[in-house]
Amino acid sequence: MALETSADTPAPLRQISQLLDGYIGRLGAVWVEAEVAQLTRRQGVCFLTLRDLRAKISIDATCHVSVLDASPAPVTEGSRVVVHAKPAFYAPRGSLTLDLREIRPQGEGELLAQLERRKQLLAAEGLFDPRRKKVLPLLPRGVGLVTGRGSAAERDVLEHARRRWPDVRFVVRHALMQGNDSARDVMKALGELSKDRSIDVIVIARGGGSVEDLLPFSDEALIRAVHACTVPVVSAIGHEPDTPILDLVADVRASTPTDAAKRIVPDVRDELAGVARMRERASVAVRTQIAREVRGLADLRSRPVLAQPTTLVDAEQGVVHDWRDRARRSLGHRLERASDEVTHHLARVRGLSPLATLQRGYSVAQLADGGVVTSVEQVEAGTPLTIRVVDGTIAVTAESTTTMTTQDGDDD
Image: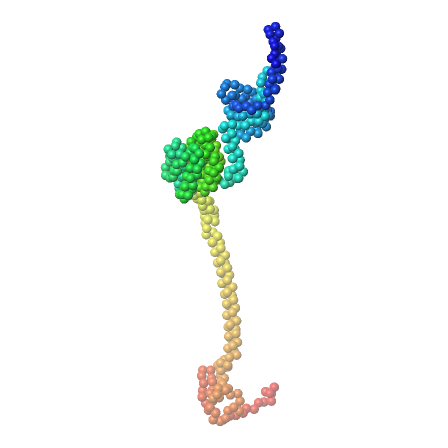
């Protein structure tokens, strides 16, 4: 019902404010398409300014922080969204606000939400696990490059890599870097390069672009193909802010194609300088070691035992000579005693020898069979005998025998 007023009967401002609050309150919750112009978080509450996509119209909006966090994709300033909101009129200030109950990203935001869900599923399978990533070789025999034909990315990778290491060998496979067939084309080139045994690393390079342009490099089939590749893969897609899922599954992520060239081959100048430094360090270490050993030898030579090494030998030689003299004296004494004993025994033997008896004038009579005559009864007249004297034998013949009688005293 229209409010009747005139210059004489004006309506108070509070009445107009109450009426506006009532009219807006009856509107109910509505779905609104807009762009986020400003976004501020304060103590669990988010304050937004929504702007129309075409007209220069903006309305303030508020919501609890949980509503913003429940969005399937991050909401930032500049994001295009569709919100479910209830209009509210704040009477004390006379301002209109939207109480947001749900936020849904649209356009690029929705696309980012889909990529985020795909990223989470692949991460849950372990495709991005750092422990599964392969290490790049220090100096690859061959480098495979998948890029667009005649693209700036191809030129950047080749020029910068050859500038760093002139002898690097590239095997280039051109593929579509944009469009519906791009992922399939890149997978084909990746498969060809991975079968080449001379290829030690593969680079997938493309320049920057919008989210839609880089969408093929978040294709699930391509991501799984890169994960299954036995050759290390370097992702060089877009620029620093661009992060397709390929960057997460690749063994190395390069921020730009130029950065990829720096990562796949070393700088020959840096390597030569490093070799020179290592040679200098090795030379210094060897000289230091030699100087230390020379000082050690000088210290050893300055010690008395090495300054006059024969000192110990002379002392031990004196001990040996003493023991030798003692041994000689001991042996001489023993030989003298043994000689005296031998002489004594020889004298005794000689005294008991029959030859000594013969030398005193005695002789021994022997029969023809060699038996010694000890009684006259053994000999008869005419018996041949051999008389043994001290210096020979005498052959005789017995003419007669005489028996000697013993005196009585001799029998004792």
